Image (cartoon, rainbow, N blue to C red):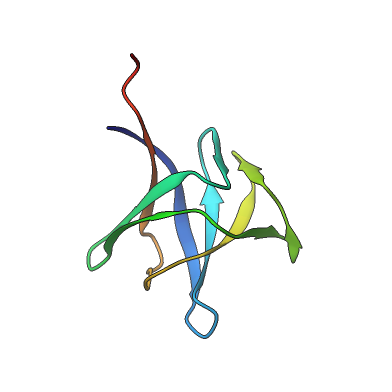
Length: 88
């Protein structure tokens, strides 16, 4: 699997297990598999819930801030990678 750096965590809300992510390249869509990686964070998950301005969305493009529900704790400045299958 190839990976593409698509964003950076700018804030984490532990009570609701949501990270604010600044999308820096391409886009993140519902159903994408992402990897969160940082000094003490390292996990992979499917994107199941995203919001922009408290509104559910199915994608976020470069330049947008999006809230993503996470399965584990993230930290500010953790990197967000989208995994991509190898071309056939």
